[in-house]
Every structure is written in C-alpha cells, then in structure tokens.
Length: 236
Length: 261
Image 1 (cartoon, rainbow over the protein chains, first blue to last red):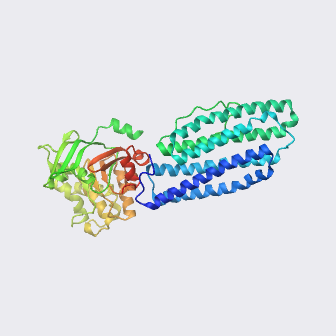
Image 2: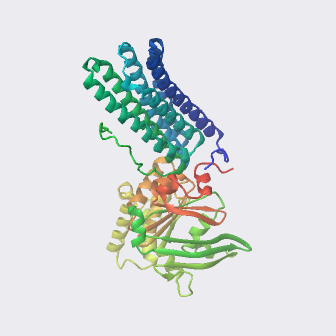
C-alpha cells in the first residue's frame, strides 16, 4: 500500500503522521549512531567518545517519551483505522524497542570506560565485524520503516542469524581464552557482555522489522528460523 | 475465528443473491449478495448515496412504498422468498422490524406504543398477556425501570434516547426475527447512543440485527460483521475486526481511514 497516493481528507492527520515518521527516523538514527560510537570507542579506547554515547542516551529516552505521547494523542484525537492504526501501534512498539537498543549501546560505552586497555584479547577480534553487521541490521530495519518495505523487513530478520553466529563464535573463543588466561577474566567478561549486547541489539532490529512488516501488510511475520543460540539461551 | 465458525455452521436468517434495485432507470443497487445470521450484528457502512439504506429497506420491502423503485434478484427469509406473491407484507414487516433514524413514537401512551403491534397482530388474547408483552418488551429495550410508573404518559414526552428505545420496544413487541436499524443513534447524544449500543449487544443472538450507520466507530463497537457499500455495490463484507484493522480492498481502506476526497 502506498501511503502517498491518497491524502487524508483531514490534512492535519497527515501532518501528525509525517511528524511521527520524522521522530521515528530520528530516534532510529540516534540509536544506530550510539551503537557505532560505542564500538568505535571500544576499538580506539576513546573514553571521551564513550562518555558522549552515555550522555546521548538521554536524548533517545526523551524521544521515546515524545513518540509515545504523540501516538497516544493521535489515537485519541484521530481515531485511526486500518493501516493508519497499524502504523501507530508499530510506532509505539518501535519506540520502546529503540530505547532498549540505546540502552545496550550505553551499556557498551560504560564497559569501554571500565576495560583495562592493557588487556588486549585476540579472542575478541571478531567484535568490530559483529558490530558492523549489527549496525547494518539496525540501519536496514529503519530503512524498511521509512520506505514501507516489507521485503527488506523480512531480509533483516534473515540477516539476524549472521549476528547470532558472530555471537556464538565470540562466546566460545572468549570462554576458551579466559580458561587459559584467568588474569583476563575481568576484561574478557566485559567483552562477553558487549558481544551479548550486540546480539540483543540484532534481536531488537528484527523486532523493529517485524513491526514494520505488520504495519505494511497487516499480518505478522512467520516465525523465522532462529540461529543456534543454545550456548546462551535467551530469557525472552 | 469463532465468528467465522459461527457463520459457517449457522444457517443464514436472511440471504440476498444478486439483488439489484432500480429507481426509474438508475441502478441504485448493482447486484449484492449477502448472508445475515442470528449470531452476528451486521453493520452497513459507506458514504451517502452508496446504497446501504436502500439495500436495508429491501430487507422488509420498505421500498415497495416507493413507486419508482424496482427490484431484481433473490431475497429469502428462512429460505422463503420475501418478494413472492404469497408473502404477506404486513406479516413480513412484523418478522423483520425496523427502527428509524429519528425516533418516531406514536402520539399515544408509552403502553399503547408497545401494545399497538401485538394488538393488530392479535398476539395477546387478554389484558394480562398484553401487559406481560409490554413489560417484557420494555425490559428488553432497557426502558422498563425508567417508565414503569408512568406507562400512561405520552411516548412523545420522553427524551430522544428514551423515545428511540421505546421504538425498539415497539419493534420487539411483535416478536420479530430480524431488526433493521437505519442510523438509530444519529439524532441522539453520546450517553443515549451508548445505551442503544449496549442494547444492541444484549439483543444479539435473540434477533438478527442489521444496522446502517455513518459512524464508523459505532459500526466497530456494535457489529461483528461489516459490509462496506460504495456506488451501489458491496465492496467488502467480513469480520468487523478485519475490516477495521486490515481491509482487503483499497476502497474500503480509503473510506475507513478517511482518505475519500
């Protein structure tokens, strides 16, 4: 369905939806930047950048509140139906998911400030590649939202397996490394949690995509095949 | 899901097959087919002039009173053709009652408004039974407690919402099988509207109910099935929950989301 073909008779409703789409694009962009910044801070041991990411999360939280308020107000005042209703529900859920992505990025940034830079751990060398793959997922999920692209949303969910595979291999490598090098358990644990955070961000990118798919098609995406995550079962 | 099963397993109360209605040369209804059952309140929605009221009025032959109107197609009530020459139209309208947009109580007492139908149809052999029919009808219409101490007051002295419930009681009194409502709340305030809507919920299952409404929120609130009419055709008919969250047809979607120019 193409939204731009037919405008609402009530133009102010279109204005509300355009504003809301802008806010979703902004919160998505900020979350993606936060993930990128946190991982750059890790790679370069850049504490200033890490602190900026921590600080920037407040703006993401504020945007989430703003989006939630606007969705509730729009539902109350415009009584949306069909794809309008689905889009608003999706926006509400997406804002919550993106706020979590921001929290994971902030958590990564906080860990950057705690890791002893002297403890270089080769077992974590896949982390930057994992971060790239994760950031791309987030980027694609929001592109799918902006373009109402159900196919791209499906592709994001399929791509999440790549991130899961990264996680499983980093997990194994880090555990093996810590067994052999008990003095690295401090830094190793931080890196393990960073990998786990990236894996969760990937899951949330798929959640965004599932909401996009629902908003565009009116159907829920079929249960996608999940990557082998048996080593660290998810709580959700 | 349950709604679908109910439809699949219940014999339709009324069926229309390829029904066409002409006003002179103008084709107002262009071949509509629909099944109406006892378990689901059906809402007809659509812009003004789409044919939804015209189609509603064919269900109890109200269009017979319009000399230029002419109909085609099959229309059955319990499998019986309602347009056959053997069909008694007065009897049909007792079986298929109607409630109109503007409350139209007779200028008679509340009691006589409700008793009118049972009297002319000879449904009550004595006063005691007539009293019982009047009371039952007013109870079912949710009006009894408000009027039981002033049944001899004029029906026209009631508030608009009470008058409309009186009209529903009047329709119920002849023990109909189907109740047609043509914009029954458009002249009422929100509280009176809510009472009628609650009443519709309570009457569901006992009568087949079809309601024409301009208010889509009302269609969403009271019906289990919704039919969208446009330019004399029925564009889409389905579960109300599907119509309002994920309509199949672009025209339905444009209408319910407010995109019609």
